[in-house]
Length: 238
Ligand SMILES: Cc1cc2nc3c(=O)[nH]c(=O)nc-3n(C[C@H](O)[C@H](O)[C@H](O)COP(=O)(O)OP(=O)(O)OC[C@H]3O[C@@H](n4cnc5c(N)ncnc54)[C@H](O)[C@@H]3O)c2cc1C
Image 1 (cartoon, rainbow, N blue to C red):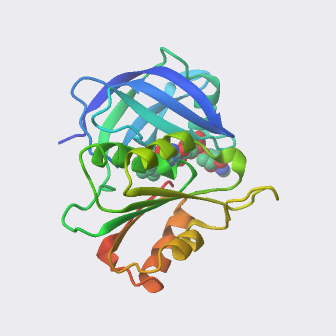
Image 2: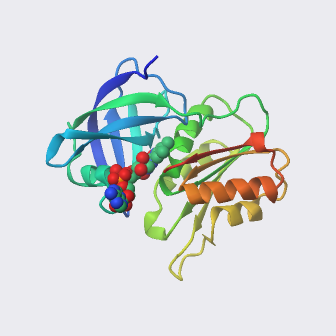
């Protein structure tokens, strides 16, 4: 069966950090997805709306939310990046196909969650956290959020609110190349995780972000931390 397609409309397009846009869209009637999945969005070429190409974006809102939320990192000269930066505003409509992907939480195991991401790789985790925590998930959840520098940090207030509301949830920010005044963790997400978590035997790992990072964290999880292959899940933002 072909994946259903819908039209949605932009509600807001906000710059929330350096080169990072948060986009909220209307949620079309009948759309269905599981937290962690992505959709394909039709992106027109600026200056020629007949020239359309799809781009994949993870849905950052929960299936229970009233709207669809995305977080998009602009890349130089990228088609979607230029469209988001220059064209998308309240009222912009486009076609989407949804849902896609298997980056969903494994409900067959009772192991605790370790979520590891860089930059906009946090999107599917936001969807998952906003779905499972209000539903009463009580097992421990650690989110490791890696960024290049302090200017790229976003959604920290929201993460703090989740920590205050749900004692089983913690988040850990790592910055790769901070200013000298930065007093948080300096380095890669996997270095941070290895420092915070001393025993991975009861953990399942979810990794999302740049493919190079995702592959190297996956390898480290299996080979160094001893996590079983079936407990390591990844989504690379190719
Ligand atoms: C499952 C999945 C989920 C994703 N979710 C997200 C998400 O939530 N947030 C997010 O930010 N991203 C996400 N991505 C990445 C996203 O799909 C896009 O790849 C990203 O936004 C860049 O798209 P673009 O159209 O701006 O760049 P593109 O036009 O695809 O270009 C990418 C890069 O290639 C260069 N390039 C393009 N054409 C050429 C050429 N002919 N020769 C040489 N270089 C070229 C561009 O300069 C640019 O730097 C996801 C990807 C996948 C696979």
